[in-house]
Length: 117
Image (cartoon, rainbow, N blue to C red):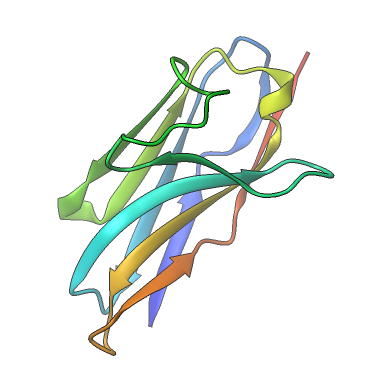
């Protein structure tokens, strides 16, 4: 079994910062990609950033930074200069080589980020 557990969400004022963490645990042989997505109220889920730092949503470029600690199977999302429109449930996702010896996509349970104006 593999689990992704996010933490670090919460309520913050506009202009503030939050750091999200996502730790993968279980029978993991390798992790190919880790990333962050979000779903705002009434909107579709969108990609925020991937751990190889090549993909950032235009709306977060220059404000959000993704990083990864391979030794801890953990990906982080540093969010600065937060805006009310960043309010959403943030999900971690990863492509993991698991006990089936195949790469499979896993998702975390989500963490709420609320930015007040």
